[in-house]
Length: 244
Image (cartoon, rainbow, N blue to C red; front, side, top):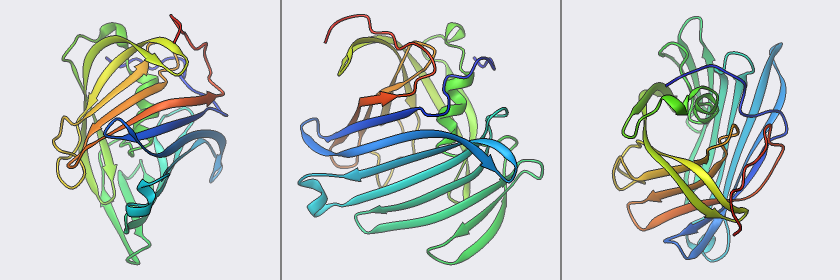
């Protein structure tokens, strides 16, 4: 299932998504960008994800989220993760530094002014670096429908066993035309946000880029959908198989 090969992304990659609530109400926008830089003398990809509500929704549930990950260019492991969110008044501001040699995460909770060191798994990923790690390492040709890909993730102050189920291939209509995709189900934690652990479905392009084209989530109340509406800086050709 895994095969380290040519990278699926590069410096300058940028995505923009439009989000809708319960399939009709414009909910917001999100962007995801990659910039190659240095962190403590190490070459890294600095990935920044931003999300914010727009239109009517922001008047009764305002969201302004920022996620950052600094990922080693060669090893595909994160050195630093930042989560600064405000979701309807639910705020978090957490900075995590990973020491992969010692298998530890130093967690600085800036909202509560606490600092602690927590043991982690080997080569653990954060919630942003996980996507880029999987883009580079999943070998689609070896996957069968129903196969589960398991890796380790650290989120906030806890270790999680991340699991991704392969659902097969599907050609979908997008802003850019018809695109062949591979379909996955990332397992999530049921509770405050998601209805159940199988609430999330992800479609990514079948080409070498593995571009995230669509995400659907069944929430505790209603549903949320994100569709790619703009992009630039792809490393590989973007394959469109039919008109809109």
